[in-house]
Length: 440
Image (cartoon, rainbow, N blue to C red; front, side, top):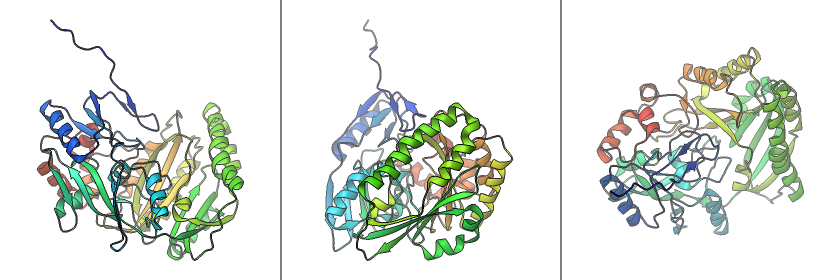
């Protein structure tokens, strides 16, 4: 009688190291047709299929469990650049970093971005990756059409006029509807941004928040727990000329201090929690007033080498001041030792069914813990605060919400789950995370 193979399975882990899986097989298809064959093969074997890009989600949204893990790294081509239409079509596995440089070479740019660029385009859009913007929303909101392989092996093209319901769901689809193989983004002529970074007191930021978000195209700030200090950042379009940070200053402040030195400070804080308030005070004073003008993606993004776990919720824009004051008071009366700053960003309402900004202007509040730090109840209590204000959790960041809660805060939740029932009734693309957030 032949013995079962004892060869060890590939172990997948995400960037933060808090999620892992041992898939039965890893596939790296090079075309949508090859992917369709892999999906049908897995379905015939009774296995699930999950695509994973750079693994930058903190949740298990991309975990294949013991199913088939699809890596899109062989699908990275730029299929078309249409200057007249203002679009670019790229394959799903292309990292945002490469897309940014390709667009710059072509004299083009995305309208808005998040603050990192290591994700694949499909991974970033499928989880709702966003930056901050008065008028411009998430990466998914910039999609104009897409190509997706469904559970039955069919390859569908979607746009507002072709398979419009599938397009509406798949732009931000959590990987629950199929595997995206190509995306068409709206782009525009390349532009410069002037960034102005300025320290500011917590109360001053909140008192001036309406003005700061109204007059600036992109406004965000970081509050340092255990202090009353914030670092603010205003990004606005510039006619130029470009005036980037000197290379040494950029390396010193944005790489060495923000990553190497910060890593050391976080390690000290994790080992000796009593030092955290002093570290926070020093860190908040290290952020100086500075301005620079550069290519848009270089202003939007920064290197992030210090590993952490993160929770982020979107709350109604009008509630953000109250929520932040409650959060600050919560930290002050607790025994928590929080080394990472709280990040606050903004986005206009959009129409994507599962977008955290669906139907309402939103403020994003993100809390972080350095890798290996004890949770201390911080995330738990922050989540209670956010959900008391009908907050919507970022799909790729830690949270404990389930389908019952999410159906109550997303007006089109049932539209999405109905579509899912139609295109993947056997849950070929399911996993534990999707069962929790979307229901069985």
